[in-house]
Length: 207
Image (cartoon, rainbow, N blue to C red; front, side, top):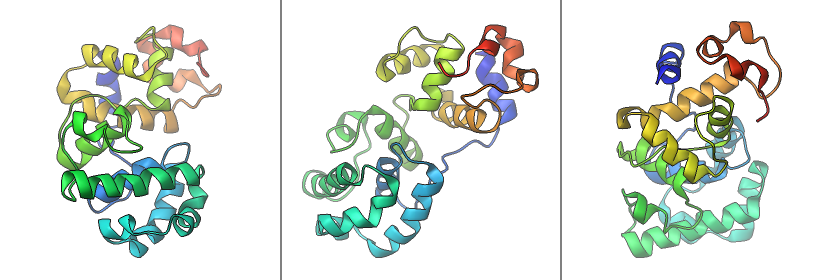
């Protein structure tokens, strides 16, 4: 796909922006990142991961105290429920280790396809799909890569357009593109090389 080829030229080192030191911390960070900036998540986890060092620390965590520890990320009650619930499921069902398949990952509280794709891709190098976040949804609709609004259907369309070898990196290239070149507001599209590939996108911002 020409658009992705250009994205690779623009962002050859695009990668996940969340900080983590193991697969469990990655899952925690991804759950916290819902409706929150990666920068804020990294600020919170810098303290959180020193306080909760093992899976058992989460299994035995006091929910009320944990809510306060992650409060700055927003939606802290639901995120607490998902993270502490995930810790229990991983310990009891998966022997304390994160599973490596999509089918198993989506049985964990707080984990849908997007989160599963991010975790198994970055933690294990396993690629079963494409992580579709708000940046990707806007990109896809702006450049007419899918007629759908549903993330799962958009993912399916992208998987047909891109070779599997590009599935993991595509999401991070699109995120970098949205953050550095094409925000969801009017900007100077003459400086956007992707517009030359697909001119109709020049008039679309918040789609």
